[in-house]
Length: 286
Ligand code: AMP
Image (tube, rainbow, N blue to C red; front, side, top):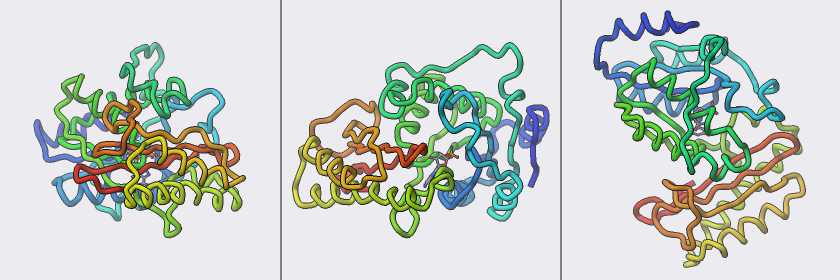
């Protein structure tokens, strides 16, 4: 596996692959877990060559967020990616991605201000900007993202479409811990009590799914059920629980195919997210 530490190295590696290689790309912020590796596996199953990136992107963190605390485990991550069959890892310094004088940002209007974008002003501008840079440099046939960050998926799909990027976006299901908590690099930041409290997120989504299965279709009723479940957990502070359209992220009144039920809550200083959605057949997926 090649470890590419700057843009010149990435460009040289990419040029050697030729014009339109069967290349899959998995962008990450590192501190890898089985959720990230599921994206790598999806690419390995489909693409001749898989590349990944590890970059804790400063522009997607707000001034009072956890950029400094975010776990960084590059050596261990590289070993895992190598075992998983990744051909190259791009792990640049921030100064390489944002050199002095850098002034261009990608704003996906509307979408960027919904869900997590409303709670974290500027977050999706940072995400869209860094992913646009990465997709431009790596020029993969396919890029892999996790449904765990459902709002990010909506923003990035829109961006790739609007910028005519010749990349197919592949979305992979949420990988969960045995107790149902969605895997996240941020889970490492939780105290034992916070980690226990985090279980209320999938519990709320499961309760909503059970009500849906029993025939409830009102978005407000489903959301109220989930909120009540979170309110029972004193170790969590709810940021939002919303029913929206998975593509536009605008509110929906009823649970129908394409609806997304997204939740965000703080356990101490750590912000956790989770979601469920209704697939095209109207099945509750989480
Ligand atoms: P991150 O390192 O948090 O930026 O995540 C990199 C990619 O992995 C994003 O596309 C995430 O949506 C995805 N991802 C993170 N956690 C999970 C998970 N538990 N299951 C599936 N994909 C995930």
